Image 1: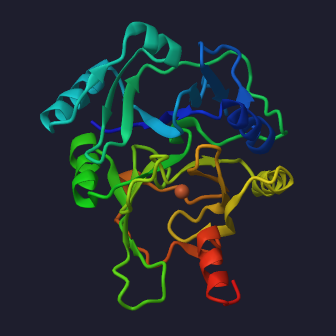
Image 2: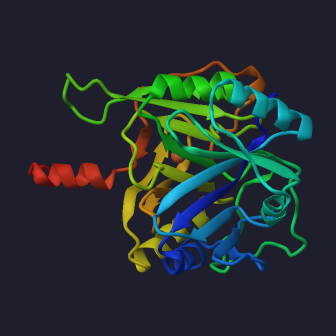
Length: 308
Ligand SMILES: [Fe+2]
């Protein structure tokens, strides 16, 4: 039982051309050779694609897709999710082929965040080459990175991921983003799959935004590549959501910028790699050791006439 890693993301957008420029010129990911009608696929490694960008009427994170070990584990997971009362729909053989997987099903968590679970991944023979000169992204056993979902029904949704899906708690903090002593704070759950990545999914106790997502994260192989990506963001005038900084919990160095669909993309490097088989859940008090000045915090402080 358990989830191996985050495999790919499915994003619906009314801004496909904007996504293309953002991904190739700013982030430096590679367009995949094959794509279906209305869909653009992007690679960050040897997998046929990691980002499925689909034309649609809204801008919305449609699904985070996680890999499990084999067909039997996929069937067991599906049975547990059905027993938990969540709707489940099998992907067709054609849809599985388009995703480069042997089989998959769609479902959602109790807050409605879209999920796919698959087994039988595949590789592309053409080597990954970044159009922006990025040395490479860190994937392999740790998967493509992480996604952070909103969970207004925090306890219920956290229990779904922990007891039904099988993720483990790496860090279970409550962050306070204001100086108000009466601020109840915001619950977060950073959860690991069966690999060394600190978290492959995280939940934030906040209302669901139209984009259906807080942020996604991609990991670059070097801090220099993160810095160069930050330069490309500034040159392209992509809105910076949080300045360069280092997180306390996963120790990742990086920054956040706004994607064309409204949620953020975290670009990071040099993270903590955990031993998930022997980990005691932490509860850190603050998200960042230094940096990470959030655009919304800066705007609020400026409004209050303080130095940001
Ligand atoms: Fe993150």
